[in-house]
Image (cartoon, rainbow, N blue to C red; front, side, top):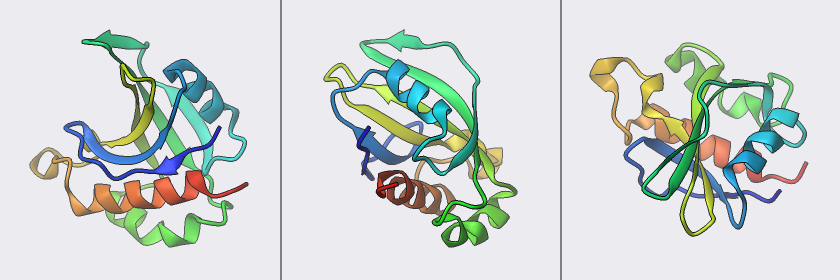
Amino acid sequence: MRFRPDQRPSKWGATAAVVEQQRAEAVVEYLAALEGTPFDAVIRLSDLTEIKGYRYVLLQVSLDFSHPHFPRIAGTLDEMGGSEFQLIVVETPEGAVYLIVDRHNLPDEEMRPDHPLLRRLAHWLGAAISAPA
């Protein structure tokens, strides 16, 4: 599966990456297999839901400390309070699947999709998941 970084705005959080012509289920399966990803655990927090043609699922992911890209995000993770975060997998009606760092990873008073911590984490994730394994 070939992801590419993507930074387009989202009301749900900070967009990290996109993969074209996939289904949300296939992306979740790929991420859960932990091959070629920066994750050491993926837990599904919701069932696949469809609203207005968009299909989405919420995941809890834990980063792999031994991933070669991990040192680049360690400082941001310290600010956020850990190496686990929620990720939304969103399939569009056009067949693209986006990975979005959920804004609910932040305290209520800071919870906004354009928060600098979310944007840094999403930018890092987009690069890390798009890098050849």
